[in-house]
Image (cartoon, rainbow, N blue to C red; front, top):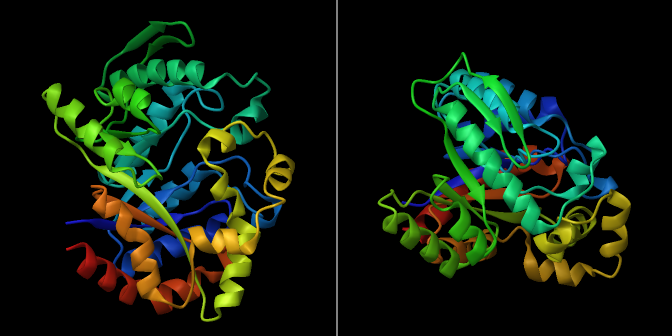
Length: 327
């Protein structure tokens, strides 16, 4: 059965609102909740970017049932992998084992703040691969000393671990990254409804004698009783999403995103994001993910100020329609 999640989009709401939204999303029936982990929003108009790990720690205390996840954390520049492992273990303890560590190769927008150069994608994947080994060993309770090409660790050990090791999900975008990470992560993350990607992941996992794991996707929607207001809000806040991650990963500032999206029209956004009051249109926009084999799909409701109305008015009937359609 497909699971449906709610996205704590830290770029469009402050920390107290995010915690409140998380509690209400659980009450409305979402199966899991994912949080972005940014230092910057993509556009100035989004207006927020609190520290995701503090938010998730609070969310772990006001929820009881939903699984929690970072979607996704970059464990290579802004955070050292040994520190990421400690954060993940602590959050898993606080949530009674409900936490999955989602990892990715990062975006310049968030990682440039520490003053290091921004590597090319191949080197970023090298760094992520090395970080994964360190994080996995620490989460398994080992004392780790490491001298690699990108990281050094000196006798690190985690003293507070959950009863079961934290599972790891990794963001992939193509065959090369699937081949690289399918054996070292537990689950796949992607924002593309690409059935070939999911199939290749599962085939490679089976070939290694490993469980297939989950495929975790994400889809933006912009509900509003007024379709014109919904489209305007989606264009204002989410027009960056059409650039694709190959572009998004290398843009360093919100000003760069403003320039890169200056020619994106509202109708372009409307073709990519279901906007307005039509729940059936939203279901149709999500369907390609379960048809591609995704087991978990997180929804993003565009607009921080719209979350309360979305959760109170739309969440339950939308989840009912999604579950009926996904089977």
